[in-house]
Image (cartoon, rainbow, N blue to C red; front, side, top):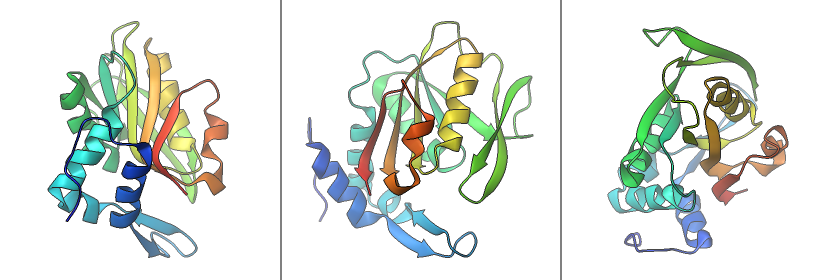
Amino acid sequence: MQPEPQGESAPEDYGSLVKSLVRDVPDYPEPGVVFKDITPLLADGRAFATVVEGLSAGYGPVDKVAGIEARGFILAAPVACNIGAGFVPVRKQGKLPSATFTQEYELEYGRATIEVHQDAFEPGDRVLVVDDVLATGGTARATADLVIRAGAQVAGIVVLLELSFLNGRAKLPGIDVRALLTV
């Protein structure tokens, strides 16, 4: 049985929960990559509520929560509801119907481009960026750049899991980056 969501859980409690319910899938999506599968965590209602609480904590007033496609959407939308902020999807190129800002970046295993609607943020909005995993930092950096280009401020970046051996934080100087579990 997983712990019930309660007030201010210690960060190590969040980390233990994430560690116990995120599984490694070797050689996915290509050989040499160990994919972090969050679906067991999402399938456990209590655990999911607990990590949403953890991801929501400690950023002060936030106007918008930006979720990075695709698994970041799953986490960011309930975080936005939890803190009373709007949700903004940051999508893969070609998926948004209106005028966008685009940003290319490097992944652990390739290159990609993400985008956000040009009118997604108001000037000065405080934006919390939410994703599942911080790996090389490319996606998080690209998202932060999009937020800034749109005239908003990055209040912080929060993730379920940080892969510290890939040194993604190095691409995010001056940004408050938090992870529920760092490995």
